[in-house]
Length: 244
Image (tube, rainbow, N blue to C red; front, side):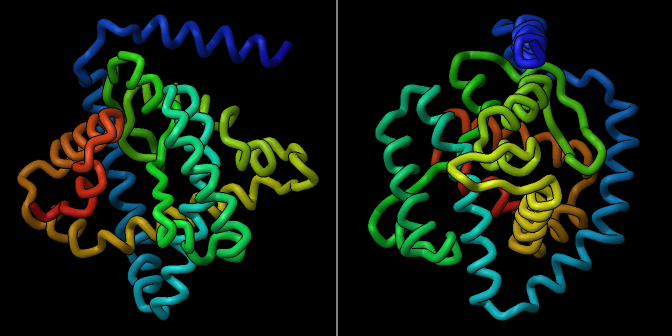
């Protein structure tokens, strides 16, 4: 019964945001700007110092950590490739996960890349976008940051689609493997720190050079999501070129 309720809620939200809403509109700009300031304060006080400390770690440790979190993210990409009808990409992602988890020692190394098995990360928000659902309202969430109506629905759906979420956040056993919510938060938090550390210089440049930092982040987020939905090569560079 619970599953049916979630399905009904999910479908209702999709119908609400609809395919006709093609451009992201501000729904709660005043509130979003206040939340954005709060998030930036958290970043300056907590996340940025951690990211700077992380950047001082030996390169093999940083690379291994990045490989590990990317490998786990592959588990969400596989079903979304299938939902989008990209079966070749789903096969590559599956092979990449298997190779990196086994030969790559639970994903700490990335031998799959050397074998030409590249995995493009996908999520439910991107899948909805590929079916023509527009972004709907743009707003900012505490801690989680910028999102849209479509992508927020996608984030909820991700917890049902992602096998890693099932064995951690939902604490279900899958193929004899189980975890807990602390495992989920640890991996997601590590992934966020890794991203923040990789873009330390770019974030600093954006803060210094933007007349309206809120608007800059909004534009960057929407462009990045649109490129990812189109599977554009530019999506790999959006967040890596924040100073451009």
